[in-house]
Length: 239
Image (cartoon, rainbow, N blue to C red; front, side, top):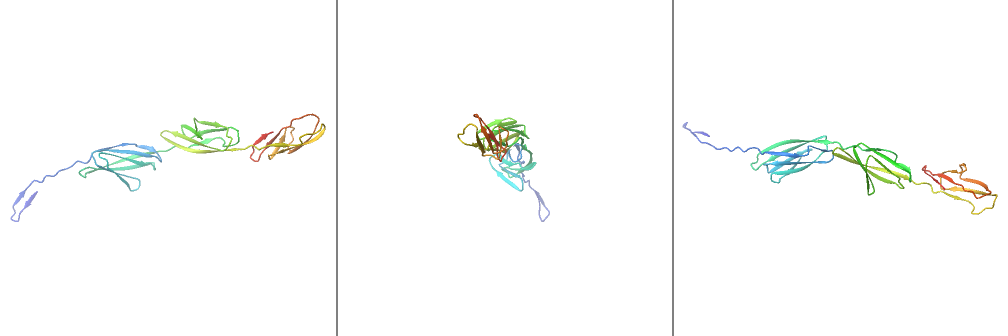
């Protein structure tokens, strides 16, 4: 430092200046994560405060000695995270980390989901590399899933592709068979006419080939007749 008096004389003194180094730190953690999940980043170094910025003007402070972690929601195809480190001397340093979003698999399936109760359901998963199916408390792994529903069921399909996974629910509708019955006289005489009437369905087909609700027969011996009934939902039963 140089000083000049009014008489033009000068004097000099030395002024010590201390230059503090910027804080040194490193960032570890996830450089990619599945879209919709969270990535975890950790700053380690000589700072005492780390300020994180990501998204839209979002900042968070984390003070924990020389280490601080943060969870970052991964929504965009690439998320930039800004980290500002502040040390005990109030010196700062800044780094930028980019997190790539991995797309979860888009699951689908093939196979019918509407059957008559007791008929087989055969489903095949699509869109991922590995799968498991959950129905009630039971889990089955594999590409295909088969069972015979007696009532409506909801199946959860979970698929994994690389590091990411997703789920869909599949609703299976099991339609009931018609509740068929046949009415007629309890007792008849030989060579007497008997009328058999089917109930409980929309369409009927007898073992004689007749497709009516009622058939009339003259019995000379004991005979057995069966009828197939088809309900409004397309399901059938035989009595």
